[in-house]
Image (spheres, rainbow over the protein chains, first blue to last red):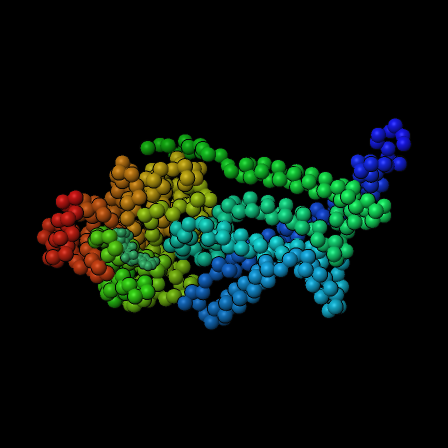
Length: 256
Length: 246
Ligand SMILES: Nc1ncnc2c1ncn2[C@@H]1O[C@H](COP(=O)(O)OP(=O)(O)OP(=O)(O)O)[C@@H](O)[C@H]1O
Ligand SMILES: [Mg+2]
């Protein structure tokens, strides 16, 4: 036993082992962090787009005066998107990953594990976001739409210029939450061999049979990432609240 | 005799088996200021909402310049851009400034240029005394100010007829006056208006024609001098005496 409490070459306790593994596999952990972030960011952003699209589709209404083609299309879109949302919300992401990856491989569709991982994240996020968006749309007072309809705005333009901007603002906290969840949920993608953080820890730990220490390393990385993003989102949200006062346009103050 | 803008024929509206409008026939001529009065629940709001197609009637039809307003969305949009509406709850767009509220629909529905939309907005905001507030968000305005902006916003569309559904009912008493003043001013410009109101003095002074609605029917449709002083209908008399008694 050496006097060096913090040996990097000859670890004896858990703390030393943690440090040792973190150093020895640093490039693997960095690579894993990168892939985790990459998958989570792309998957979440594209998932949001999908969620908004599905949320808007689910809010569509058929007008008795619409032509038959439009009526059929809207009903079909609503049915398909409803089924999609239901299926992805009612199955675990880890199972979705397996089915999509191996299913597509069996169908001879070539794709990298990372692509499959992002696809699963997108589909999963889209399904949850669709419900969030729908609730967000529903929370906007109907008067906002009627004000626009009454001046001849089409339902779609009203959605784009009036309803969605307001709903978006209301669901920012939920979107931030979804991203943080995704950052952590990418860990399940190791089952389809995505080299993200969880996979890195599994590999590193396996080489020395030091699983506890190895997972401790990535726990710390997840924590730091989530902590930073959480603070960042709170900061952004505050910034978006906007000022509570306005400048009077003095040039129009005449004859008041 | 001036031309008929709107012709409401045999209009009926039921919510489930609750028949709210029973048989409404009203012709609106250019330049008329029609006030609609009646007790709560008589169907006044529903009538205006049907006219603007925010509710779909269950019977009858609406002719706009002798042409039936169909249920085709694009046709409805065109029609609505000519038939403005001012709501009891203002319905200003909360995500936009006063100026944004006044420019959005002229830009996106009428497709006029930014410069023209801006000029129109300023012109009409001046009319209602709200031009200095172009940068304010609706949440920062008082009720009376909101309603004046809503009126300016509707005017920006150059509507042929403007519908008002109890524009002062959600206001604190001290703000009712400023909105009524703006509306009185408008009445003198020759704009065609249909106004649902509980302000009897205003209706008597401003309207060229007053309609008393009762239980889904037009019970009386007459010049204000007649309706307010010598109503033919028993229900109108009851309503007015109840109203005047407080
Ligand atoms: N969307 C709806 N669904 C069901 N019933 C409705 C709906 N809208 C209105 N009603 C009913 O229709 C009747 C007439 O309502 P309306 O709002 O037209 O009355 P009103 O004359 O405007 O009354 P007020 O003076 O109180 O505004 C009421 O009994 C109301 O409950
Ligand atoms: Mg009403």
